[in-house]
Image (cartoon, rainbow, N blue to C red; front, side):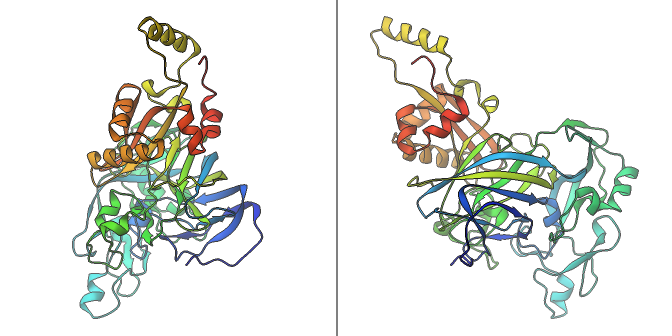
Length: 445
């Protein structure tokens, strides 16, 4: 049962408190009015929580917020109005779990082996930082070094004042930043994670990149308590049959909302439409990145603190298994872009010359899918699209192939199934007004 005292709904709510688990047992803030705004002050998602054994997830996300009028079987559109980077530096890199310091999954169930051997409490141990580097994470009870992950090859990145360019720094500078890591990361008061910049990693030096801030985790809580980093079909698969308390069955994993997306198009100007699987929806945010390449092949990227403002809109009766994304028009694949009036005219002429009537107006939509590996994620996304649009699976496959695309959000298994869908199908779903507001009414039909 959702924990929330009845309150009057508000137009604007600021959220600066955090959790590692998401689901029905969450403390819920709000409610916020349908049409109101939620302002999140997020903290880094991956590496900071990963080196903090008391956090039971690979992410530290905000507490969820109730949305007035959202009921199970509805959907909530999240209009991303503001996404502003706060961190001035971050550290990231590839990882491996430290054997003997976790049960089944180093993202979820971390332990202190010394305390376990001594017969003391050893699961989710409290820790403190003593200096910098991987050896700085120490158990508060026995003072052993117990960092759960080793950063195999990592880097420390600084950002310019405009947060438009990032550069990876040399070891001496990385160690300087590590000594005041919390200030560089801009951790909020209520965050419990250790700042990852404290590792002082600098294996990749002098590399420049562009910033393109996006939210890796944004949406509604699942109908079962899950570690926030595992509210998705790929990382969530590691919970199936696990030996820790958050183990689930394959059937229980279907209760997820798939809002740990790591898709770079979940950025300012986008609209994310998410399922309501608990009354009130429980909209939360976190895991914001300064930039992320499609696939996130290193598994991690540049985790940052951010200010994120979304406007919420309840869509009654739109029952979703996972999210729909309306990215900014510039982010659409070539074949999935709306047709121009000239293209429509040429298409009509070609159709008539071949005794064919051109299909009615079509507009872009992205249906997101996830699974333990890429092909499973594609199958999941295609099946969701077929269900929503009233098409066969084969029709969705054909449309996505000739007038769409499948994009890889994250390895091992999160994808965006793009297609140009008939306008009347979008209208029946109740999302046509959102699609037309994003891409314009179909021209020339």
